[in-house]
Length: 164
Image (cartoon, rainbow, N blue to C red; front, side, top):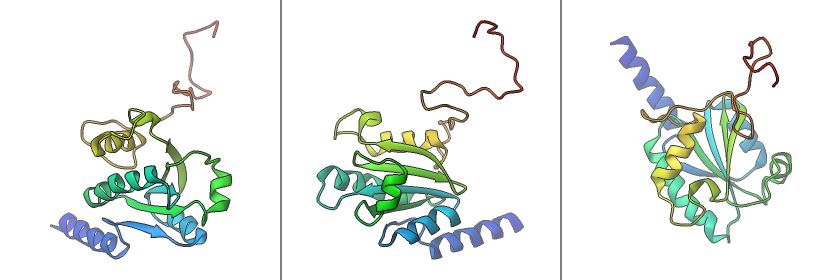
């Protein structure tokens, strides 16, 4: 009963913070505050007159209503010039994932979504679940991966590959 009460309180707190909606951030400082204060955050960097960004908005809006444990937001590249430079965003749409105030993953363009405009919301959902920012029962988050996708070995782990 106590656990149920805690879950209800967390649900109310999330609702007050705008969870379950897809909001636009108007100031870069608000973006920085959001990524630091909230546990799971998905940020779409967009340009208002870019058709593909509007398409991505429709998918993210649907996901925001479904995944109440993650904060979904968008910010114009014209507003967030420092972050655009800091994260090296050169292609739109660009989605950045933050977990526990750390940058964890990115989806740039539609390359990972079939490389065309006809991808489904489910394809985007499954891709985001791989980063761990949203939870799906049949998708395991990938951890300890390098940029190229190989397992990252910890220095104290022994390797069977002597010649490696």
